[in-house]
Length: 441
Ligand code: SF4
Ligand code: SF4
Image 1 (cartoon, protein in one colour):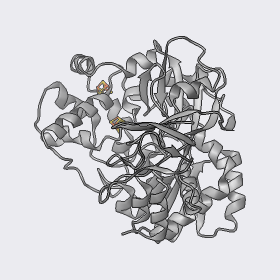
Image 2 (cartoon, helix red, strand yellow; image 1 turned 45 degrees about the horizontal axis):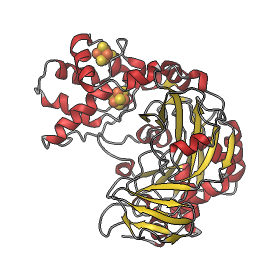
Image 3 (spheres, protein in one colour; image 1 turned 180 degrees about the vertical axis):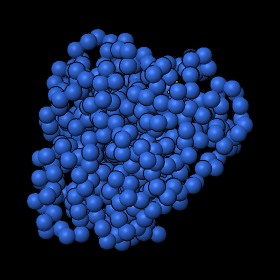
Image 4 (cartoon, helix red, strand yellow; image 1 turned 180 degrees about the horizontal axis):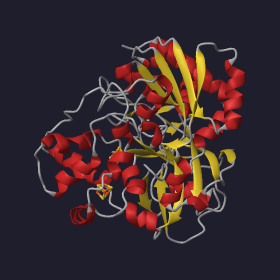
């Protein structure tokens, strides 16, 4: 059931900016006691949230309090890394007049921004296997989401996205782009690439999606564009075909269990032991099925693949394949246990962010991301109808129509989970396709 705040958030098309793209108005309709603002930004190389927290601390705190009001939460927690000294200082000064919001200073580890790790670090509560923070009375929102919530309460829809552009580009930095800017235009506005053949990671190196060339567009969930040479070992490793992945697993996995010992879900107390799932895959055994289905509760953080496995195997990719097979057979996640406590080694297996970055082989691109603000001169945008969890939005404009920036061009269909899309530039609608709306300024 909606409330005034969730209605405004829905109207503005706010979705989780941290990567998942869950429609925020649904979270605003829940009842919880705590709302956590996620400013951890644990993915290496990304600086978007850090820049936003410096530029708009007041708006983020206001968005957090609006979410607290919507959900009935009595407590707000602003969680960010202790090493973000300037941001911590800015929030500390602000929060002296906001007694219901406290600051949580996190360690510099990956994946501190994972919702389940964050909930444990800030509240001491453990989210059940396969569950969400709501199961333990918490809503988690990324800081850009909360900035967008605050804008929504002023009637301003989501039309921009903060993006870190780093790697093989001439002017790396943190930019605010109109949603729907093509990756090719975005990179051109950074002076272009410095090598001819590139791959682009949409997001961070640990969990982002890799595409070759400059295809793609900026979505509401695009936190970074990391441009790397197409033949970089990191790209080759991450884009290995799944049949190769399986062959390597069968012939190489030595059951050392390093992947289990460093798995953040295992350390939270969940019943996920990656080495046992790998064993079940190697022996093609569906017995005990209990082990195969553990793949359902993997969060795809990539620690097993990038850091843990001494043989360079990827439990993460293998589990993604296992999940697809289980879904095709109609096998749902049977794991819903709620651990009483984390495992004894929890505190000793937190992975320093620098270590994660070093293992990706992308360290040379770190530390070159000044905030450069909103870009101007974007003349064409492609607005994807599905850039959120749920059903695609339904176009409400026709080809040839003129639209103003901020005007709704696709609405969420009635009765299903979805989110609205708005024109991010003013101009003429030149195409309404099954998956996108194109506007030319
Ligand atoms: S770390 Fe690698 S070799 Fe060791 S059990 Fe896991 S997948 Fe197998
Ligand atoms: S990707 Fe690997 S380390 Fe991360 S949760 Fe899944 S199995 Fe564990």
